[in-house]
Length: 514
Ligand code: KIV
Ligand code: ZN
Image 1 (spheres, protein in one colour):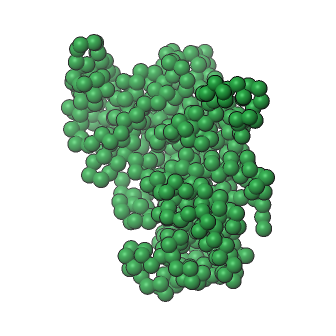
Image 2 (cartoon, helix red, strand yellow):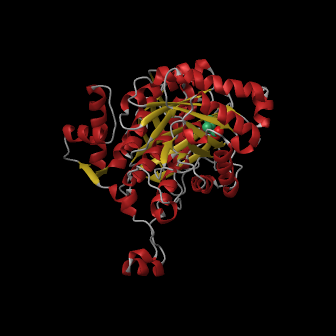
Image 3 (cartoon, protein in one colour):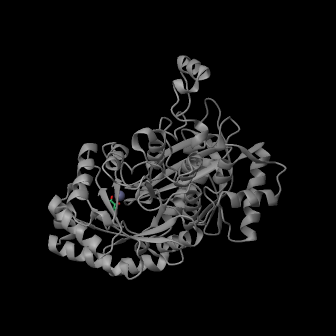
């Protein structure tokens, strides 16, 4: 059996299914380029049949990525598969990932199909995909709650039909490590043609067991793990890529496996995904949390100074913490800026866009002496590339707060090409700013999250604000960054409103809900 573990990243597909994490085409390409730089084996770029936007995003990723295999998800039907083929066709290497639920619960309540029909449809879908490519992955959705005899029959059938990767999803995060390991082992033993496929797992983190379950499956013979940056994903998320990669690498003595991942790209990838989606990384998160390598206690510090290994099992620089370096400053010119954008995988459509971005960079460099990669990414946090981005725009603002006085915010906003001067008082400057915006927007949205994080360290740092709004079941995140956190807050709120304003009709591949 191979000692190479395939890393399949689904940040752009399952990760994007978390409410509020939707990304624009340009953002998806930027993340895909970073995943490629990290040498991820397979990038699941989206679900092309869900909407025109998703189709175009997968196609753009397929065009942009040269080193990793680009994958598209499709339900097990001809139309979805054809759409995925069309979106992927320009990739240098591509894969179709098709799925159909096999648990009694899903077949009866969701699909309303008999087990025999599910078996027939699964095999038909793989055979249909086989007309277009050899690289086919099949997932029996909700496998960990499926009847084992039926699961064996379906898997045998789809391997016979041409599937080369069999992915076992723990769709609802119900499995525990020993059980998932035993499931993989049983399937490998009982499915007669099991040696014709690579075994994979896709775990959800509802019980906080996604990484443990995935590693247990690896011990039982799985050689592909599906995972996401920062563990982003539906509900409690998916298996965290950074934890899997570093577990396998740090404990090579135990697992005896390698991955192709360049681990120094992990922290930049984590920061990029967090800044684009507005999903903040908790400080104590393994590998990528701000405290993961901070030795706060005096005893630990003493130990680390004497000998690093006393309290450190990994080195911060090995996962990319030291990549946080000054890259540009006030005197940097357009060419240096353009070159760094290229290195960061930020593609601009025209010279006009470059001029606009360079202007924003210069404004930032006037306020802040040292510009880091994170600052450059933050410049594009709300670059206005999503549909509807221009509906609301901040022209200028000022706010006043003073001890014993009610804070006041005054804003000039553009709304559909018309200028509005608005002002409001609030319990604090942020509250006043949002109330002033709402006096024009009247969005009726509920603010469900407001958070501020420093993009880099020090008080000179830009503040990155995330605003999550909910309206009629639709949840969106807006992100804004500025050295003035009230201005960043206004940008984040307007960005969220613009996303709410944009009409998108994409739907969830598993539930079918919009
Ligand atoms: O969780 C799941 O079952 C999935 C499948 C589509 C693989 O995401
Ligand atoms: Zn999933």
